[in-house]
Length: 304
Image (cartoon, rainbow, N blue to C red; front, side, top):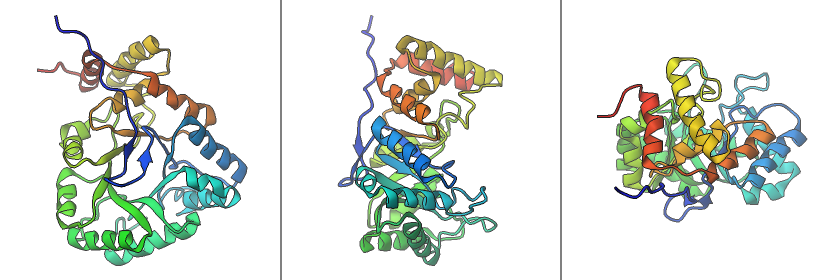
C-alpha cells in the first residue's frame, strides 16, 4: 500500500519573476458598487484583514449600474483618497478592452487610452497588473504586444496579463512580447473545467504564469446547486468541507488552489462575513483521491 499523502498547501507567489508577492486568494470588484465610501472601505479592509492583498477590478465593472462604465474603479478611487494608506497594502490589478456595443478593442491607441482612464478613476499613478479583459480578434498580437510594452516601460503598469484568452491566443501574444506575460484569468471552478481540459493550466505551469480564477463558485451554482451535476459536485465538496469544519465555498476555493498551477480564486462576495470566511480555504488539504472525487462528480463520468 502506498502511503496517503496530501497535496501541497497553497502558497504565496509573485507576479512575474521580479513582481510583488500575492496572496493565495484575491478579492474581485465585479459587484463593487454604490456611493457609500465608508461601506466600500469596510469591504477593502475586510479583505486585507483576511490576508488578501490582490485586488482585481476592471473598467467595465459597474457598467450595468446607474453609475455606469468605470464606476467600480471610481468607487475604489474614492476609498483610496479617503484612506490613502490602504494603497500600500494592496497589489492592484485592473483590466480593459471591453466596450459596450463594440464589443472589444485591443488596438494600441485604445489600450493606451484605457490605461490612462483607469489610472484617473483609481486616482493612482500606476497599477501592479493590467490585463486585456477579452481577446479582440481584430487586433494583431504584435500591435497589442507593443501597446503592453509601452505601458510597462512608461511605469504606468508593473506587469501585464490576459483574461479569457485561449492557449493559442496566449502563445501568439507571448511570441511578440519583449516583457513577461505574468498572468492568465480564466473562468475556473469545480463546475467550469475548461482550463483543465484545453491546456491553459499546463501552459501556465510551463511559462510560470499566475492563474487568477474568476467565478470560482461557478457563478453561484456551487452555493446554490440545482442540476444533477451541480448537486453531485456540492455533495462531494460537502464531504470534504465537513471533515475540515469549513463551508462548501471554502472547500471549493481550496479545490481550485490544490492544482499545481497554484490558481488564485477571486472571491467576489461583497459581504464582510463571506470575505472573512474565504480564508478558511487555507485550512483545507486534499489527497489525490479526494480531489479527483470532485472532478469525477463534475465530469459526470468515471475517469479512464
